[in-house]
Length: 196
Image 1: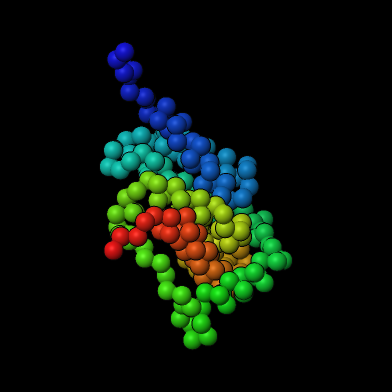
Image 2: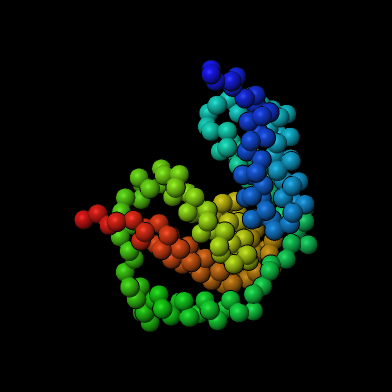
């Protein structure tokens, strides 16, 4: 049976909708805002398909548009965005810090051998694990981490958007990176046989 015709540009956009929605929900923590961001992303892509020009993967281009839409929604709803707080998170994180670091600030146990990170970055499986690890972060922590690393907002903008002090932001980012590292070591780097 011969393969069917290539999907239209509109069909390709629709095929990426769930992926975009997942990231918008993770960042915005509001279903209607996430739907709005994804809808605006698809409308923007449909209104200027020539801007795509096949210079990158369609998903990459759409994520770039979505990034700007999420930032726009943050700005629009700046006064109503609130951090979710977990009253037990601080105590657990202090215990994690004590296990990971010595008093002099060095790691209590050196990091696991991470193999060849450049090769791993090319792996779709690695990105699936990275995405799962990011989603497992506590909501407030994951949100701050994604605002900084995915949306590339400045520290000042994040503090302003979420009403955080600079110290609170840096502590949250530090703990988010520790959790991400721990999750990757357990579920990716530590799960593979070590090459010597």
